[in-house]
Image (cartoon, helix red, strand yellow):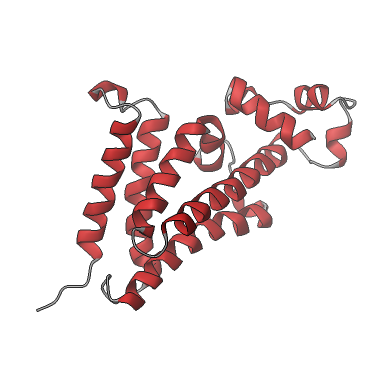
Amino acid sequence: ALVEAAVQLVREEGPAGITLREAARRAGVTHAAPYRHFADKQALLAAVAEEGFLALRDFVEQAIVDRGDVGALEAAGLAYVSFARDNPSQFRVMFGDQLRDKSSYPELMRVDQAVFDLITGVIEKAQRRGDVASGEPAGLALVAWSMVHGVASLAVDGQMDRVGLQGDQVDALVGRVVATIHAGIQRRTT
């Protein structure tokens, strides 16, 4: 209940607006109750980020399943950016500097890695099909993630508005970015 209240707080107030006291009030517990579960605000933010990574992984995984092997990279990219646009404040908690030391939260690190592993798996499947060049899948996934995450961050921070991109236009941009990624990592035949 505290994490749900904190997620809602983050949606309404942004990452900086979260307090243990307000999360407790919204969860209907005493102001001291959060300290039984969370050492401090950082720990509660880590739980918010953890919930976000779990939701992101499920969202991307569902997009890949719906698409099958063909087009999985594009589906993953579109899902990633869509999640960010639908959950901008939580996305900021997941990737922003509100959490000073994520390594203090092993479960957060695990679910964060699970999202990256999902993208790496997409690359590995494409390599097995012969669609993507051989090489270290995690390195290729890092290239793909960097580009798609950049688009997601720009969208979340309202930077797409400055060039007039909204809605489906952002999705079209993601499609172009993924096509660029694929062109860069595809297997070359000589």
